[in-house]
Length: 108
Image 1: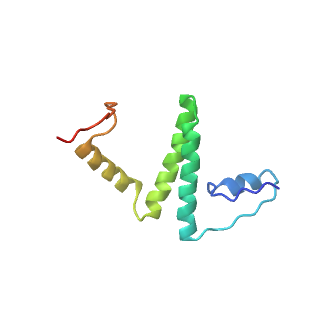
Image 2: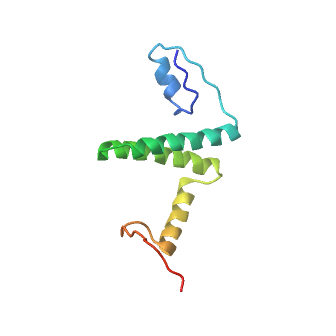
């Protein structure tokens, strides 16, 4: 039996059970959950970085977005509040639409 030891989406046990495969799970405590969300974020980011077409990139970005929702909730916030913070930062510092690449600065 393969060993995974990783955070999975809520319906994965149901999906596995429907295939007739035996499995075991446990519920994480809050500290473990935060750490596993971070681990999963790294995993999904790596998968996104390794995509080579728009369809796969969108799939991985959706996974990252799901994790961002969960992390916002875990930090006592909401996706809506997170979006407010993002909008304020974009208003103050801009976004990334202009494709600006800073090469260097010089102190004079």
